[in-house]
Image (cartoon, rainbow, N blue to C red; front, side, top):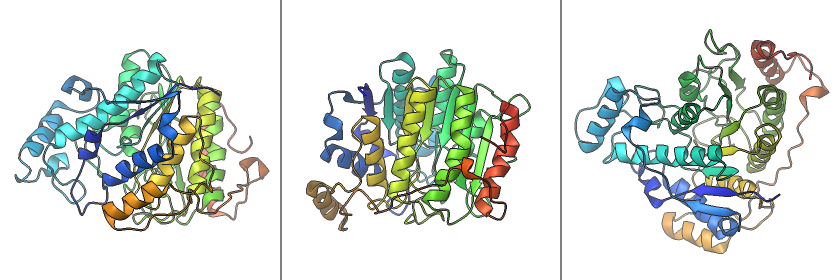
Length: 395
């Protein structure tokens, strides 16, 4: 399949940097982009690397309040000033750094450029691994996210006349900021598969959270038990995402590929492998073709094992998007492994696989009421499927 693909990148995107001790290290994005290049994925004749577009206050105000934007600009201009609790700035999660506004706006510009290219038909797929800052709220920062690039890009497309946009979030944390931005808007279907809020930030995303009065059933939350492995996670995805996308018929599929569901991630408690994540990305690619005319905007997100997980996961994502999927047992280029040694003093993985071969049991194989995961899946289907004319128990 020949597809026109763009990867949005500029070294300036690595300026989104909360400091050397913060979990959201920008080097993880740099390493992923470099690995994709060393694997030859960016040299495909159907792939182009494009810079982010500019991002002004008018664009940010599609989602964020003018008072908040002004607060971010002030904080970045005087990072030694007082913390701003009202706007979520200057705390442990969101410490202030020089140029915070400019760096955060650059990420938004990159994602909106990706949406513009997909919406206008300039590209079939666009990847922005620096994006996916899904926790930021209209008036405050949250969960390492200053501006919500995802919500701004979706709001931009709606302003261009889009009528149906689907957002699928596979980050281990609930995609609360995007959900909240479109809570009462049936033009946007938000689906988030995440660790249960009983055990993980942001403590939201229960199945019963289904959207506002004008959009009941358009916020979809699958809250998965700690320890969920590839097979269970893929079973939940199979039970929830394809039937809803088939019914909704989105014009664009936006996905957030946080890699923090991996068993090595230090901030969460799911147990996915690189191989399970790769399978999820491939399925999202297929679903974009089946239900969105191939229009797919794929973003990064969380992921805090910066050498062993994030670079491999997102290099797989880029390979799938550009039509050059990386075989799992591919050896990592020695040039990349040497760069990791020299840059971080760490020994990098050897292969693009964790050696897993997930074989999920499809939802159609039957429901087990004694299984916590199956109960969680059915809770989500019961909460939202009837709003779409779907049977929660079958199909």
